[in-house]
Length: 398
Image (cartoon, rainbow, N blue to C red; front, top):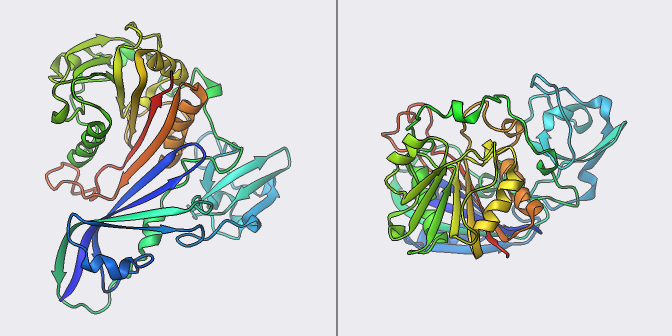
């Protein structure tokens, strides 16, 4: 019999802007066939469920090390236009599919590997083809969830675990150099659907925006960050908050756009109907909250820095702001740039909101990917994985 296990791999690293933890769940790690990084192939087969093992890797061990020769300068005429109706808009600091630059990079038009634009002028551009994590020491923590035995098999796919946990975007949320992609200068940000929000949200929408497994992860994070018997503002709230039962003693104030939804939210101690896009000023007292949470809604804000300034005013010194984003939203009501960004870039955009506003420090990000979607979920026949989540939180510095 061969042994395999369900393992969550946490990829921890530090950029100049923040501390990062990118978690990736693999349900069937095969100790006989799969390639595990470092000495994990020897250690994890002997690790019991609930226990973990951590190793640190220098730059170049898990992904190729950064090298200057992977900075490619080419003519702007070598660009293949994008697929969106406005054509390809190039902005320094952003990532684009490698296929956009397939000719100078010797690739193919369908290549979706992300590469970063570091410089552009009237005639040329510079593309960084290094892996987004190429500069960083990486800590990998493997937490064993459960183990199982399987009969011996011939053939089958081999998984390179290091490749799995570093692929798909980790590293893209951080600026790699002095070039930083930010939307802050464009406020108020525009949306495809500029319908008055009070009209759009007039009809209650009592639907879950995340599957049950993802909602548990959100509650777990808020439970880690918030303290019992404190005051929490649920910003852009609706019929459901994601405050865990462990915080039942907290006073939770909700701010949202639909009064019926807020009334239906049994977790709220009070609520306020207020449109932040019409007026980012929040009519609540200074230093009146210990924590502010904003769950899968930040992408709708047209004046994010003004709202963040208000949040800083409402928080006590050292108070926590926690923001959750996912890969789902109400189409058209999100800011225009949002849909074109890679999910990890969106996390970086929110992190840059905090940096540009200036009232927050000790910024941390976390992502969760790869968990199975609950079998009872109505989309489980089409989507095997739980909704991916991207968290950003920070402390108020005032």
